[in-house]
Image 1: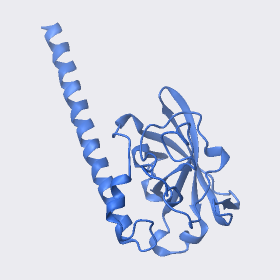
Image 2 (image 1 turned 90 degrees about the vertical axis):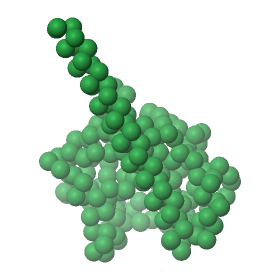
Image 3 (image 1 turned 135 degrees about the vertical axis):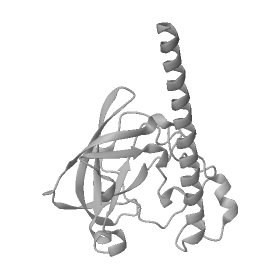
Amino acid sequence: MKLYSILFLILISNVAFAQSGKSHKKEICKYRKTYKEDFLKEERSPFYGKKKELKNLRFYKPDKNYKVVCTFERTPNAPHFDMATYSGVTRPYVKYGVITFMLNGKKEELSIYQSITLSKIPKYKNHLFLPFKDTTNGDATYGGGRYIDLESTDIKDGKLTIDFNQAYNPWCAFSDGYSCPIPPNENHLEVAIKAGEQNFAKEH
């Protein structure tokens, strides 16, 4: 009976894990559908009125292992600074906080930023910005790094969940003429983030 109970628990655990994986895949597919639709709605986007171009967007398969629970530490007295962009201009930001998390058995750390300009607009007052680079850049993913959007309301009891499956390319990956922030050196990871958006399938 004891062996039967153990096998039953293993079976239940495997079923629960499989269901969780399917739920996450559905969540990411929905996210990417909205991501593509937004290109067609935003007049400033590189694909406005160019629906056929969306077929050239490429992504890694959804991987639940890249959805991580992080420890969040606020940096309330951080000074404002000018974040460089690929167009040469700068944008005012402040370091909002630091997250630490485990990925593939290794402890990683990233900084999260808040745009000074956007924080003054009621609609975006809670918006946070996570730009990062990793070792896939210039190979499987855009050389300039990728971004993840967050909300300050996502932070609960010092914890924040980051899903790298939602990492996306800046518009500079698709076309010239945009001022895309360059991920600060402190957000350069020495690990491959094989999740989220990959290189665009054609040159811009």
